[in-house]
Length: 103
Image 1 (tube, helix red, strand yellow):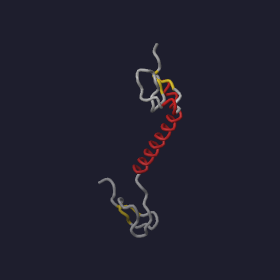
Image 2 (cartoon, one colour):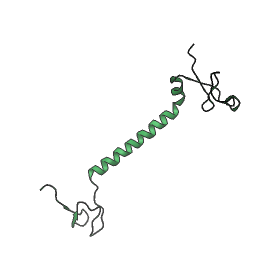
Image 3 (cartoon, helix red, strand yellow):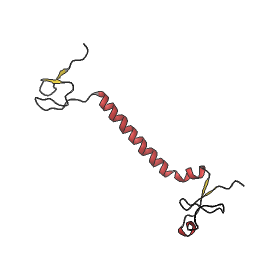
Image 4 (cartoon, rainbow, N blue to C red):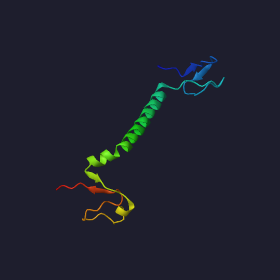
């Protein structure tokens, strides 16, 4: 038949259902199945990886902009106030970046 539906409580020794989170006789919590612990560990590792990747990207955003072909320009308010980017080579008002010249 496989697995039993009841097991004995580790605190009082009475029979407890495998699906019950605690003993109905003494209230002692029962151990969680292994799959719950593995899922919790996986989610913790996934969250830690996301945080580490976000911090890494925030620290290297300047290098990513340069490698993407943009040159960082002065983004002071006086320089940005020239208006939207046009064919005249002005910097973007949102980022202060100029496309890298190809000539």
